[in-house]
Length: 85
Image (tube, rainbow, N blue to C red; front, top):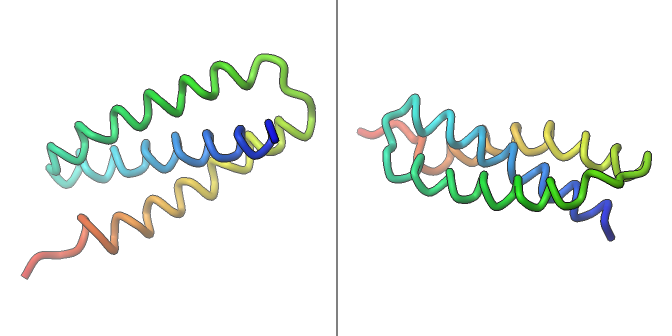
């Protein structure tokens, strides 16, 4: 269960960091403000879970990031990052 929590918290923090970057670059002030809270909450979970991680938990931690960044790029492009006409 800790493995799932580590994967999820890493996925969420990297997802939010990716959105944060895209929102800042796109000038989306409110979205950038909101993602800061998501980043902080996810990092708190990571700080509590990582110190005693075993090998499987480290793998879960390491795989959350790549999935998180790709998902954030996909989600941003289909939501707030859509070109306006």
